[in-house]
Length: 390
Ligand code: GLV
Ligand code: MN
Ligand code: MN
Image: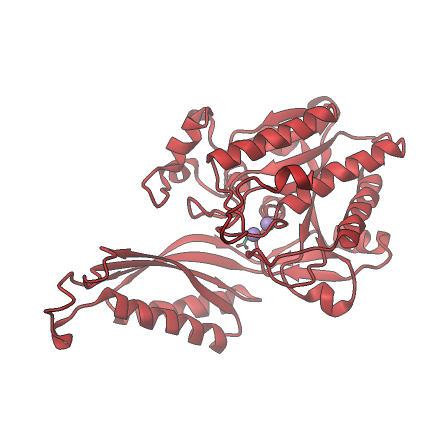
């Protein structure tokens, strides 16, 4: 499975992946998923947001079932494991269970959530947010990529029915429990010397768009005193985000920026930047954003919230039960967002398994997992499925 996935959407220069929602690469990944499902005799259903569900057994007749899986899309120049490790491990776990002669008492599915990273249209976990109603379908349709293509256009061009985009009660009713296996995106397991952990919670986080306005003018003839330069305001914004994050013991990133007119010899007339802020508590995140907001106001800019995910605990009983089942693996919370968190927030029992990442690096080509740890993750998933669907 890794060999088949390896070339899809790989950037030759960076070595990282560019697998964005509703692109050609995404279509190839979806075909790969359907092929793997078909080869195992699973029935692939697509929900109203285009998430793929490969079912063993009939969830409508005998559900709700147990669902495992993750996503296949990536951030720009992302690693190979964020998302795909969960999907590949899920298929591998089903293979191992089949080889053992396991007969599930409930339907089982592997899911491929679409647009988890929000790399193209800006909203992370768009697939799961859409089916749970956390993302309004009307708003989603209008989200635009950098080239001005809307999510609605891209969805329709992929051959899907735009009028179907939206909450999907039928799909949600099929999920008894969702377990998402994911590469760890920090050093928790490295520091503990363990290969697998169970997730306890997703830390609160959000994304904000910041618009800063200047006045376009000639780079050679405009005196410094006469300039109204949106890029200078941007520099203050970036600095204020770091200061606010340190002050409130959280993290803040300005990782995406668009400059208008984006010419070497033209003073920028407009900068749009995106702030990603996260912390242990919602109050801390809001304090970071308030401080940045004060700075932006002093720069005559505007701040618009694009997405917000509150503190999301996973089902505590389930997490403790699974950690015990897996020979007392550690419990870790997550600074990253996941579809499992969106489902948990919608009231669906959800859990996560994390697999050690020796580099501790993620959203980068340096993301990694050793083969033995990947196998330990599959073994853990096998035991979890046996517990939940045995
Ligand atoms: C998803 O990976 C996120 O940005 O948390
Ligand atoms: Mn990610
Ligand atoms: Mn992920």
